[in-house]
Image (cartoon, rainbow, N blue to C red):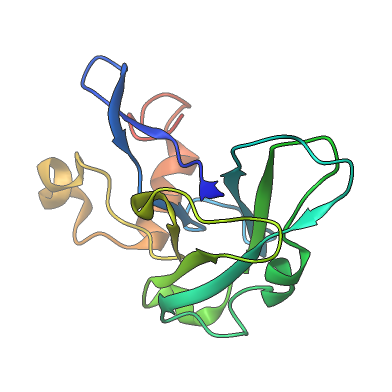
Length: 171
């Protein structure tokens, strides 16, 4: 069993042979009504499909996130369904006030259990990072003498005034 993290893309958008080791998310551009986000971490296994659900063991190896920041019950629900070789570990993180000041991280590690042996060492951990810190767009420094020091309030006002597509950082 292993975390099937996506491959890093090169400058032309093609897959390389290197895998991502972490997933990140920021609540900063979300409406204030958005209070949680679910990371979807792909988990894959090698071998034959089974005719029964098989749980897999995931532990928290490191990180600074607390129980207030995420739903720890996700780890007890880790399971590859009958007839399947892969599934997704869904980890829901919460938008807390602490995220306005710092990043939170959690590093998960797969462990062997009665259903699965471990895969390649470099694919046994997955790190998630999340925040509510709004970073200035790359172009802000060019216009800082007009807009002043970057702040959430100024940027929100800028988004109100300017049309969609004016900010090259927004999709």
